Length: 252
Image: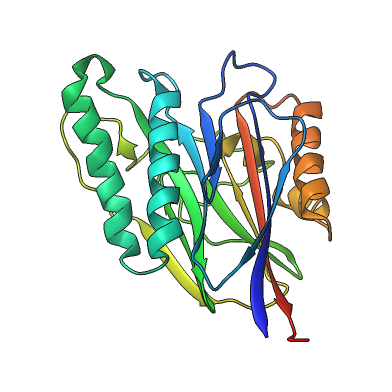
């Protein structure tokens, strides 16, 4: 049996922001463009796979530059190394961002969150720093796998509670170097398992029930439907969506 991953990704500036400070990377493909159609991917797990959603910190210098560096560097590292040394790779990308800040002090304060899925052979990992989220589709709807680095972890859209956007940790975002401790979760690759990675522009706009209802068999169409619904509800922030599903192919 050959394990594969199907994936689809899309990013958009939303209905209010002038530019997109989010960034999405799947393997060596990366985008910060406002997209109207999702990109589709099919990957055999004999080689490492990486998918990253990064959200540049609003109100800081060059948030789009920070999210691009984080998404690109994480995806390139993990597309080669996979799950081995995952925490060290994430921490190294944070150090890389601070190194750029030392070289360009005018960018002081720029920062980014990131959530990612990396897989190789029969194992996968979810990791995050900040408040971009990872969910797993389960019979009851969506199960949050990531941990919000915020004062209101697991905040839910539609709860009526205003969400604090102050982060407990992120990539960069400070005047002097600060190390990070990424949240990590490992599990086996199970055919049919479906995962959603997204920036806060999606989960602040749609409830988890709404998101779950829009994820179907076609991941590309599902990603586009999620974005379309968020835009219909006037998503105030940038919106980035990645869907990943484990599939299996029996030998001929």
